[in-house]
Length: 279
Image 1: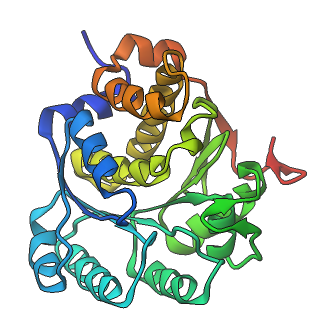
Image 2 (image 1 turned 90 degrees about the vertical axis):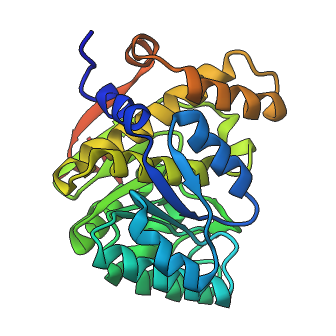
């Protein structure tokens, strides 16, 4: 049976098991690793600056998460990103809580100049990186994802990368093309790390795709797959604890038929915005 276009990216990950170098935050490292393993990818959490610089060229993709940022990790990230760029290893930036405190905000904006393939954040984070004034409470956005759509498009054009705004509706844009995905579950943000996991999974899909021309479609596929997996996991979960387990199981078992039957996706005209929301 031939895979549908989006699900074919899932098949690539499961076939090639891309090695994802995760500079994850300390709160979500284990959950991120388990989700990648459930997906069929191979996680690696190499954090020493000297080792990260040497290891990154061996990876299929790099995921950079700023969740528990400190000065040693900043050194690790700088070295890993430089090594990734030197070896054409695609990397994903997860700008956790930018706009809340100045150190991570300034550092994230420096990283924008280092050519990430994808930026994945919540509405407040994306608005901040695009130069706007965000409204956030700690790591949580107080903005709806639709409110960040214009900022996401602007940021994508400025950085020449793919931008993902996560929320009740997820938006994926490269500045010209935009897709809205409306799957998921209210239980997802009640489990620490689902956003971090998504960024690492996007990296896995980039690593499996193997070429920049496929990065937009691979990112859409990654976001779609994870939101559908979360929605289906919530059907059997009673609360956040059981959802976390069901989510990992859903990532491991979600097949093409269930994915296609559940997916809710809309292609948008990136140039039409009405009241802060794409028409």
